[in-house]
Every structure is written in C-alpha cells, then in structure tokens.
Image (cartoon, rainbow, N blue to C red; front, top):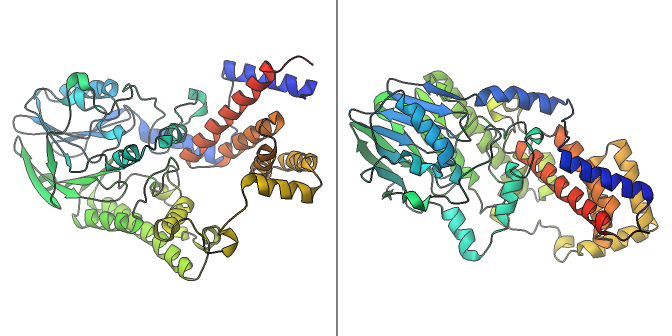
Length: 462
C-alpha cells in the first residue's frame, strides 16, 4: 500500500517527466564536460593543401580531399540529414563531383550519411571486407538487446537539458530512420579491400587503406602520403578509448588496439584526423598524442595481465590497475567516453571468461536468494529500506543502488525502492565524467521513475 506522501511524490515525478525539468549540479565533472563543448563547435577545418574536415555537424568527423577532377570523402556521418548539410558546405569549397568514398569502419555514425555523398552511380565506395561484422554477428545470433543499451549509452532517450555532450561528440539525435544505408538511394559500398594494405586512386589522389583492428574488426585507417594526413577512424579520438562499450559487444582486442596505434604512429603523420573530435595539425604533437595513447592502452593491458597472473579477481584488478599520473593529466586520455575500469574487466573476461577464479562464484546464489538471506540478517526488508534511506542521506549512492536491487529482488513492485534508486543514479550521473555512464544512469533513472509513476497512477484509491 502506498502512503499519501509517496503517492504525492510519485505524482510530482509524473509532473517532472512531463515538464522536462532538469538541471545538472555544478560538479567538477559537469564543468569539465561543458568546457569540452568547444571541441564540437561546428566548423570545416582546412588541415593541408587539399584536405578539409567537417566537425560539429553531427557526431563523427567527415573529411574531403580535393583531387584533380573530383572529391574523395572519408566517412559520411550518422545520417543523410547531417550528411546533406556537410555536402552542401563542401560545395562552397569545391563544386567538383564526389568520385570516391572510403568508410573507416562499420558503425552507423560513420556510414549512415553515405547516400548524401554519392553524386552518381560511378562513385567508388570502399570499405574493408566484413563490414559490420559486429552487428551481423549479434543479428545472426538473434541478440538485439544491445540496441536498447546502445540508445541508453548514447542518451537518445533523454531530453536536451539532460545531455551536455557525448564526450567525443556533441549531443545529437540521429535522423537516419533506423537504416544504416538508405535503400531509396541504393547507396552502399562497391569495393571491399581484403589485403593488409591496399593502394587506391581517385582523381589523382593516392590513398593507402590499412587494416586497423581495434574498436572493430572491420576497421581501416587511411594514409594520404602526399600530404602526410592520417585518417584514424575510431582507433583514435581525444578521450580514453571505448575499449569495452557498456552497450555490449564481442571482445575488443586491447593489445591489438595498441599495436594499431603504433602502426599509425609509424606513418609519421603531419596531420592526424580522429574519428571524432577536432583534427590535430603538426607532426610533433601528433606523434606525442599517438605515443601516449598507445602506451596508456598498453599499460592497462600489461598491468591487468600482471594482476591476472597474481590470481586477482576483476574487482581486485580495479584497485590494482591504476593509470600513471602522467596519463591522468592529459585531456585526450581523460575518461570522457570510455573508461579504464571497463577495459580492465573486459580484458579479464576476454581471456578468461565469466568465472573470476573464486570458487564461491562457481554456482552463486540468485539475486532473490541472496536478497532473502541479506534481509534476514538485517532484520527484515524494512531494515533494508531503512539502510537505503540512511545511505541516501549520507551520499553513499552506490550502496543505495545495491540495497535497492535487493529490495526489488524481493518486491519487484516497490515504488519507493525504484524512486530512491532513480534518485541515487541521478546523483551519480552528476559526478561521473564518462558520458556513456552518465547517459546510462539517467536513462535508467527515467525508466524507473516512469515505472513507479505508472504503478501509482494505475493503483486503486485506498
């Protein structure tokens, strides 16, 4: 039975959802993310004699190389709406037709706008063989839950005031209509590379397409030797890399990712174009950033393996693997998008699987069984509620989440547990720097508040 105060609180929650009222607390993490918005200002940046990079139109960088009698496009953005806008602004620089497109990897935010750049049926569209292996593997297995988790990670369910940015991109809601390629335009890759390194030429522009496993197993980096420009795709951007996405994916080979960054470094680029964030111009700064990026990834891998060989469990590894201070200070290695803790857990699971090595966890209790025993030890579920309320007042928000999970395992319809858990997740969202975690906290809180409010509104009058 709901108390009057709880009922009124739930009605207030409904009003909050409908009005969209929300404001982030002025925390250090919030301030840092707001400062990062400068990275996503809409612009077309000339980085060499013939290369222009569009940033801030949507999510990912879209590049244009001006050739002798045509244009080459590197990646096409997340949808044809932003793609068409970029194409129109590129025309202000050069009215030459697009003759070639190269896709760095199969994530929709890099190829969803393809139709906007295919000026004719003669355009060559190059990608690596196995494009979209990640999505195809999940689809073939019948797994689609990652789509919802991906929307939560990206913040697509949230209101504008609940998103500052996405760490490596502006806050954006895609408009591609759910399709990767827009079939009405029949735009799709026409050529696939199968070699480790492939030289292609468009309108007098010679490019090397280089296999670059890391974020995906279908990735390429593109090397433009004439002007020493390297297009990195998503194996480099100005943030700690998303070595393990919380939306879910197959294991991303962290060791190979570091090797790919090393290969990019060995090209000795004078210009480095990330898959997201603004380009880097200057050979010295590009070399410094790639070196630190490679070494930081390798450090996490090596230290995690060292801990594994000591017999540490994933939770123990989180305390054991600590990034050196020299990396923590670098803006382009701050956890704005990915997070080192998630990488550590991913490395363990990627090599050793789900079992953490502690025999206690060979056949663990179910959530409900564990909650039942904990409630008995505490003196009943009412004591769990009391402990949860106290933890909330003390600002121990992670413990609030855990206690709320115990209560909900015993009473799935508990409105107060849902609301308290939502409040705690909102508080955690305000202090975490990793935007994917922020978005996931806030999306989960939104779902819990809506569920709690719906239960109260539909409950019979007492």
